[in-house]
Length: 237
View 1: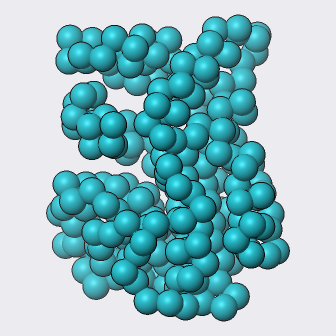
View 2: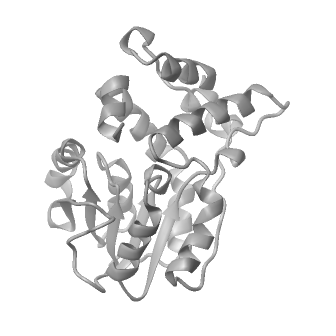
């Protein structure tokens, strides 16, 4: 099952609402981290898996002279991003339909490549990293923002249902040829390709700070024809 099949099952608008909320939830922390990692206002940035462009907008707003190429393999999402961003940001953002495992972009071109919540969905992360290595300028940096399910869903007091929920989410992602535990594997994968000067940081969002409603998912069970997906989403809430 591809990602577009997922959003068609869930409902396109509902999934776009979720992605917009996800992009903005704690975005100030991610931007702060990006600045610490060296991204500047005039950087040339490739954003992989940019989807509908919600995080693209955050990048454009916070790096005022940066030029961004937004790459995604989903034409519907790229069209939505173009409609949302082209009027206000013009030549600062370019939208490219391509596959990061075999991209048509030139060698040694980008200062920074950002992949946000992309690698957990990839069936061949090694191929993607090889392409990223090729696309970066000498001295360029790749910044991967992603999840590891065993670090997700910590509760106080402890809630044993979280373990079951994580297992169900991981099972669904594995069936889609993804890996919800990709976080722990990334450093090793990067070393395998030849990346150097590696580091890892944590960006933590807490429901007592941001509000529990920001972590809930709007569900219309009548619109879901996948019982296992419906069960997992209800468990999550």
